[in-house]
Amino acid sequence: MDKSNGYEDIAAIFIASRGQAVGGIGTAAVRKWAKLLPPKATVLDLGCGPGIPIAQLLLAEGLRVYGLDASPAMVAAFRQNFPMVPVVCEAVEESLFFQRLFDAVVAWGLLFLLPAQAQELVIYKAARALQAGGRLLFTAPAQAGTWRDSLTGRQSTSLGAEHYRAIVAAASLSMEEENTDEGQNDYYQAVKH
Image (cartoon, rainbow, N blue to C red):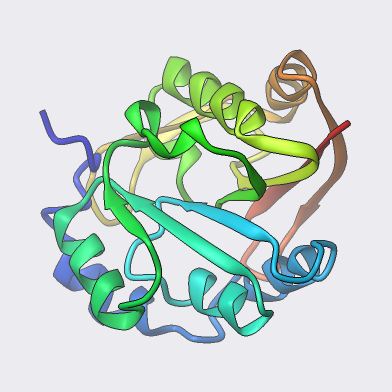
């Protein structure tokens, strides 16, 4: 079974296009979120891909980044781009990275690629991996529904904003912000109290 949800098969295409977009869609929202974190905070980047632009932006903000992606090709590209940054090739729902604590966890463009139960599991695991006061940032359409991923053709699923709010609350997090970036991607910021 492909733990990368089809992204291993299209890794070269992704890396050549989106994986080079230093100022890509969503970077303004991620930069704003990163500025809320303490200096040298540890950040887990779930579904990190080749690390550009998200990990690159976080590193530029002086944060300590850890990457995680289920695609071996994406992890290889990440290692090439950021040889000193820890990264592992694991499915987010099975990752051992969650056995340590982080100041923040980001899942930009990832959750909706996973089945509904895996999305819930990842939010719970991310919450458990956060220090008190830690922050979670993730994207998913506010409208519940399913569609075919434009790159892989596989089914993507949004549980909808109301359901994400309920999962976040059940995971002992407080939703701080729901917003939309310049590419019309809905994103959610939560904090652990």
